[in-house]
Length: 322
Image (tube, rainbow, N blue to C red):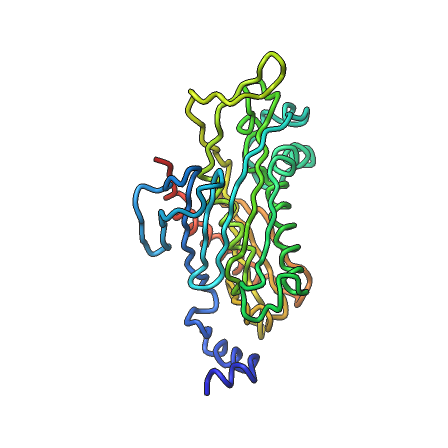
């Protein structure tokens, strides 16, 4: 009877739960799903010493992809999940990269020149592509229907926008050789395996987890100008300047719903994503129209997002190479 009522009157079904301060999956309105993170470095090596379970989630060591230079699997509760795979390529360094060698971690709002410099290292050197499979949700007709195409486009653009405006690496960290004549280019492919709402938060977390375990081989340039891998030297770990973590909210019946499911997304009057890093800096607020939001509500969302970042960072910091 309950399932039939939900299918025939989905809005009324959700409204009755929200009126009680809970949701159909048992969460409170402002509780996000606990993520599970699985990471594997190149060659299939586990990137954590042992499985670790805590109130903030699960760090697992099962291999994801031994073919990629770094990979991560993230599942939000028992719903949305995504796999991120990284491939490294070598290319010639640009003049802007050399000029921005003293670029520091982001602090507050980036100036125009900092945005220009960050584009060289994040916008050009890191390229993110997102795909959502047609079988990731039983209600999808195909991977190319209007909803999935819009979601793919939106998530891809927002991920690339964040890593462009808020640089994740120092320019010299991606140098292939000591002089920076050649640099590493990072291509990240993210595939949404299961879709139950809030793909952006899941994909961003998968991006960060996969980047944390990437190791860059040491290189040199021959007299003929050819880049060569130095196999005798151990690879160096790619170090992130900061970790932007997102929490997305949906708006329904004058209530805010954190980390919405697919059904909650369909019934909401709008949504907003807030991105903080572990330094407590506000990296991004994304709200594409929809219903207006009161200042008091925005303040609450900012506080929830900052708390969420601290929780997720506990998991990300548990990822370590042997």
